[in-house]
Length: 221
Length: 216
Image 1 (cartoon, rainbow over the protein chains, first blue to last red):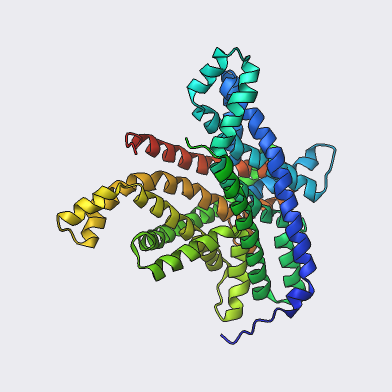
Image 2: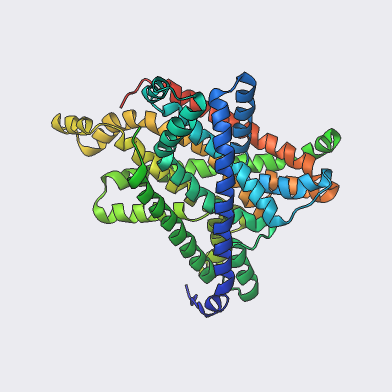
C-alpha cells in the first residue's frame, strides 16, 4: 500500500548484520558446546546415580524448561550480580544463560537416548570383559549419540534461533543489528526482510548439514 | 527478600492475567486455523500443499522475537496499524499456527493408510472419512504435543513485554525498576511461569500415558 521498498540503506549498514550473524553463530556454538558437556554429564549421572541425584537433575530440567528464556536472561544478567560480588559483560552472561538452558534440553535428549541403547549391546560389552567405565565410553555413549542425532539437529537449530533473545541485553547479535539499523534509518520492513532471510538461510544450512551427518552416522531406534 | 516479593504481588496480578489471556487467545485461534491448514497440507492439491509447507517452514525458521518485531514495527508501514496487544497476539498466533500445522500433519500421518482405504471402500465421502475415521484416531497423537505446545505459547508470551504489552514479565520489570530487587523478583517470576507451565506439562504427560496403549 504505497510503501516503496528501498534496500540501499540496509546494504550500506550490512556489516552490522553480518557481524551480528557471526556473533549469533558464535553464541550458539559456544552455548551448545557447553550445553552438550552439561547434558552428557548429567544424563550419565541420571541413569547411573541414586535417587537424590535423579531428583536434583529432574528439578533442574523441569525448572529451566518451563521458564521463558528471556526471564532467565534477565535473571542472570541483572539479578545475580546484585547479590554476588562480581560482574560479567552481557555476552558472557548470555552464553552462561543459554548454556544452562541448552543443558536442560540436552539432558532430556541424552537421557532418553541412553535408555534406548539396546540391552544386548551392554550385555555384549560385559561378556567381553569391559569395565563399566569402558562400557560407557565405548558402547553406550557412541551408540546413544548416533541414535539421538535427529533430535539433536532440531535442538541445535532452535537454540540458534534462541540467540535472538540476547538482543534484550544489548548483545550485538543479528536481531540487535536489525534494531540498530531500524533506529538509525527507519527502514524497518527492509531490515526485517533481510534479517528473516539471514535467519532462514543460516538455520536451514545448519539443518541440512546436520541431516547429512545423520544420513552418514544415524542409526534407527 | 520475601517482603519484596509480597510487596510486588498486587502489581503482578494484572500482568499474570494478561499473560494467561494472551496465551489462551493465541492457542484458541492458532488451533482452529492450524488444524484447517494441517488438513490442507496432508490432503490438499499441490498448490495449496506447497503454500502451506512454505508458510510453515518459513515461520518455523525465524526466531519468534524477529516475527514479533516484524508485525509490530513493520506492518504499520503497509497501512495496517495494530496496537501492541493486537500485534503481540498476531505475531504469537502466526508462530503457533505453524507449529499446530506440524502436529496435525504428524498426527494424521500416524494413522495407518489402510484406515483411509477401508473408509473409501465402504463409500464414505471425504468429510465423513475425515470426521469419523481419521480424526478420532489422529486426536490421540495430536493432543499430547499440542498440550505441550501450550507451554511454548506461555513461554513465548514473555517476549511481548518487549512490545510494551503489560504481561507478567512487564509487571516484574516495572516493580524491579521501582524497588531494585532484581534477583528476588526474577526468581519469583520464574516460579510463577514454572507453576503455570509445569501443570501443563504434567497434563500433557498424563495424556500421553493415557494413550500409550497405541502401538504403531
